[in-house]
Amino acid sequence: MAAASSWCLVVVMVVALCVGGGAAQLCEDYYDCTCPDAYDIVRRVLIEAHKSDTRIFASLIRLHFHDCFVQGCDASLLLDTVPGMPSEKTSPPPAPNNNSARGFPVVDDVKAALEDACPGVVSCADILALAAEISVELSGGPGWGVLLGRLDGMTSDFNGSLDLPAPTDNLTVLRQKFDKLNLNDVDLVALSGGHTFGRVRCQFVTDRLYNFSGTGRPDPTMDFAYRSFLSQRCPPNGPPAALNDLDPTTPDTFDNHYYTNIEASRGFLQSDQELKSSPEAGGTTAPIVDRFASSQGAFFASFAQSMINMGNLGPVTDPSMGEVRTNCRKVNGS
Image 1 (cartoon, rainbow, N blue to C red):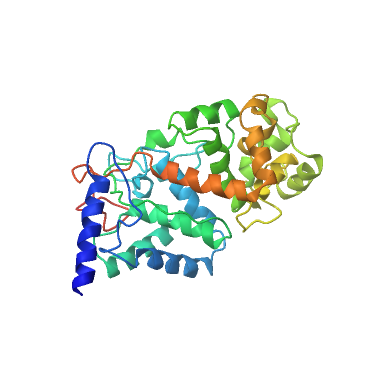
Image 2: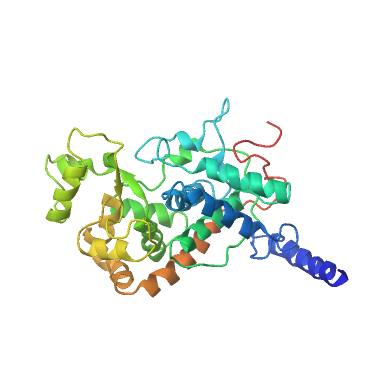
């Protein structure tokens, strides 16, 4: 018992160093003493959720992405609308959170389980980071050491969510949005690989099928057979909310088929195919797509590092600027 207490004292001192000083630093062992079963608790809840919702793993990694891209990884996306502060959840297309971002009840379930085990300890922002890694790993993808120690922000940024990378963005715009956050072309291509599993609505491909860039014609970069297949799935007057596999080959597995699909001009979203087919892709993103298409190991390694890079966007570690929410949907005391 004394040895365990001494070990925890050392860990607490190390964690204090991790989040102290000028630049925020996160630690893999942040909860080793305060909530040692945190990872296993999150994993258990996600496995149970997946039994009734095969889409949940892809949805959870997307929540982490959409959270981090708006004022940093602070769980601002999880906040519900209150008077004077509209929620990021309600931002409309082409930055599709409203009626698109999903998985919030599962995050609530994770939070409830953690509050039961170690009240007031694990932040909602860290829950999103852990859920993303676990979702990828359970789907056959790589694991990585999740850096932890974020606090939850106190505000939502609806206007910021309007500038999320959108499925209709061309490569120039995508690169600008990533560069603004100090994420490079490898990060762009690797993180886009999250589209190797999950589902997407017809409304995000109909322009490519029938009226690309206002031409009244289909996107010429799309493979003819794939376009014919999608036209049957998403007819001109069909239901816009009908779901389609982002990766028709292995829709629920995290692998590198996203890139082999793009190589074959079978990227579902315009933003996907742009990585290979845009005129500016040849000297920027296309060689990275080629590398990931030919080597799943190279993709996995880069994806893991890019997730760490993204997870370190603007973490809140100053207690005067953040908190550990007891309910991920609202600021404490509200």
